[in-house]
Length: 168
Image 1 (cartoon, helix red, strand yellow):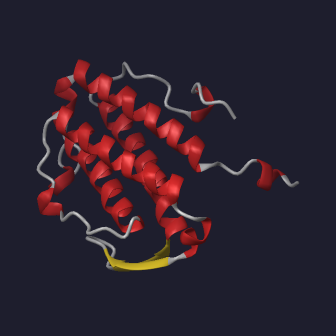
Image 2: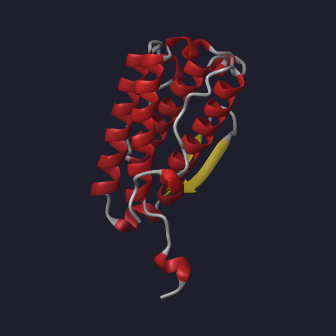
């Protein structure tokens, strides 16, 4: 067996890592509610809280596609509080776990074509879409951690997989 075959990062590991990060962040925001309103970008992501909503809304929308469900429109996402947004995240995560634990392997090869808000029409396999959910999540949480540190919220935990309790 080659190193690449043995060392492939599994969805199980990614679920464990990102779920632990979500729990840390939920607890952290409850202790630091002022961080929720820290400026971030523009539009829907004008604040850190808006970016968290974006992470979970995108995760839900992509998972709904994976499950061949109707996709929630952006206008339907009205969650604003820390509790409401993380409840959405829990729901999205539950749906993703459902897909990953019930879909037959051949379903991962199925290509979907759909319209995105910013990238136009996209065609991708369900495997690629599921993988993107994790990478999208991790990328934006890294951005959030950086912006919060730059705004005086440096009392965070180690976010790296290497420093986590995840066993590999």
